[in-house]
Image (cartoon, rainbow, N blue to C red; front, side, top):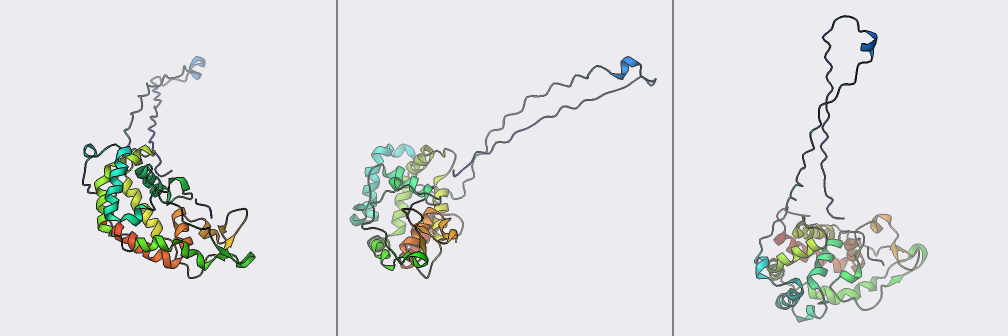
Length: 267
């Protein structure tokens, strides 16, 4: 199935100043012919509009970081340090699945696109799952094959033992670099940790289907037959494709991470 993808729109306030025209008549006699068409009143000069500075974005989920930007290397050099830190937090089996090139930038781009309609495959910092997407049936019975979830079993087994506290500690340590990468992505006034919480909440809102989702194949790629499912975000559709049993432990881990990076309770 096809992976589907602006987050913040600038709000511009325009101030319009309207000049009033005041006519004062002192002569109480009937106006002469010349007075019937008096010369136009010259309006008072319109003051120049005052330029309003754009409001600073409200940070909803401030993150206590463990380093400053000055203490961290450039993004290109930081990827190797991040991989080393992830080795301790995730283990070598996870490192075998990670695409190391431009890791921080790709993590940020993936998080930003998960709640959108499209998730470009090239930005995902994980190696592709082996095998092909499996469907069964035809016509009105076409659906995701129940065996399809086996393709993702290796990933899910690696997710369950992950220490979310250690993982978030790595995130806090390198957060200034994630924030800079988010600014470079086109959001200089936005806060990346807020976007991370939004992405987590969106994933947690993915429906838990008791039966494999029905499909249609209008062209080459499969789509969900249910328009409501097809309209969901790229991240939610990924969880649906994983299957209910695979999505459950992933949601457990997402809730653990959210508890540490979000200020307010979530779903």
